Image 1 (cartoon, one colour):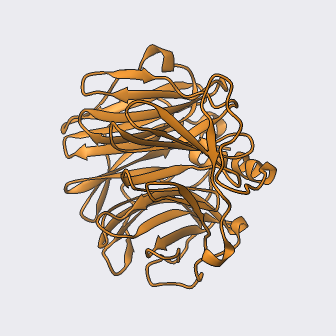
Image 2 (cartoon, rainbow, N blue to C red; image 1 turned 90 degrees about the vertical axis):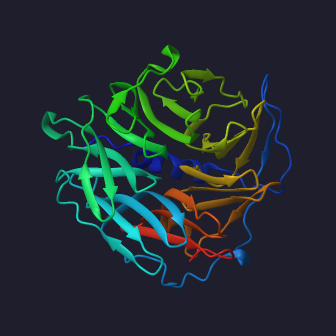
Length: 375
């Protein structure tokens, strides 16, 4: 079977973490980490806060497969990407939100076996990244970059190499980054300059084989990559300052942890999320130091932030909201075993958000936050 990208492979690990987790009584500091941070604990959700579970008109009818990521430009414009089918024979899936309905775009221009895991918007279009090929019988798994312009989906030329791309970020039509890796592949990091995708160089310390890489960028001089090394050591964190990538020391929290998502609005507001053996982990960088929070019921795959006072994080069936002071778990409409959330996007200039992934029966799942509840 095709080796699964991090956003899919971690499902079993996250589920095991959720089963092993202990419930939290309050948002009190945990035991100090030897030589590191003290993490607060996010309280468990109140069942009374759950949504109705009814269709709201915002959702898209599910199909076999999964959504991998979503990006929103406004309440009337969003792009979701993923795949139809299964982990061996999937076909890339792209859909547009018009403000009243979702529309699936044709993917005939893409390889028959292809997967999209993340999407980023730029003025006039969007970039989506993933992989093509299934790796069976010695077949190759290769990176895939897709450009969406209007309703047209086409494959972009990329440097020839193995591995897959797991995340993408864009700050303009002439500035974007794509990252990834693989079981036998060091981290891939490519830059778009408006004309072509070319390879970039991460710090030498980050060059080992990886399970996945996540990415965020808020400007030409502020981009972040979090790297999950196969060695099981602390995650690697790198920052782009406009001229080079440099290591940022990952915080010590007294236990091993892995990171799978990152978001930033500036060099002073950066969130990174993942999991420990028994809980989710949420890290925040304020430009000077890291802070840490633990959520007892699940691991986290993705995070979205629009300001220092607003963020959402998702993973498994968990959705957590940051209001500028604390994180709160927000229940989803259905029992947790039905959901596996892989992507989240705050809708700019609104109280809304999108969360995407798959349901327990391996069908696409799309949730909309209307400012009060998930539907």
